[in-house]
Length: 141
Image 1 (cartoon, helix red, strand yellow):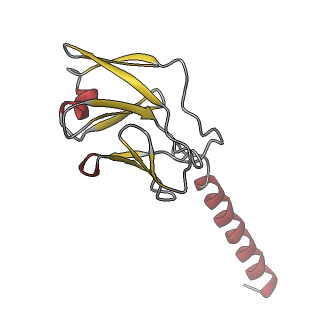
Image 2 (cartoon, rainbow, N blue to C red):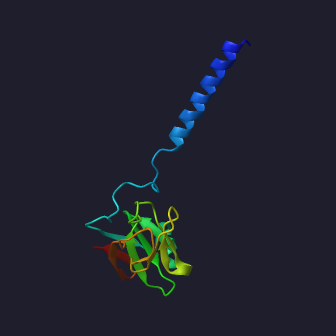
Image 3 (tube, rainbow, N blue to C red):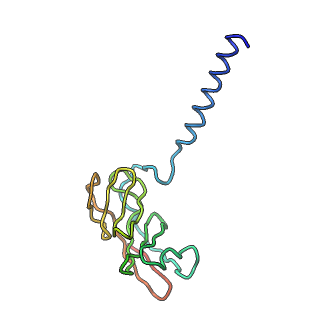
């Protein structure tokens, strides 16, 4: 292989590597969408007897549905807040043992009622009402 062929193969390899990395950077559900407010007009019901919703049968469990995190507190109450952080719209998780919602991207935390407990977020989360009837949990605005 002469020098010209060697440099051409390195260039092709670098271009391929760059393309693969750019594809890997495509927007995911945890990436910011730019909108830091919660969804409006929320009204849906989860059947707690279904395996897909089994996380909500245990205290400290949570799931995400319709842009909303629905959690069962360690006290056994149901709470629901917007899925995205009010700082930069990254996805939140519920940490039942700490009784908070947490953004792993910048470390913002929120209480179970949506209040900011640690920045950089400065606005509270949008909260939603919950109503349990038998095994049906309604989440609504």
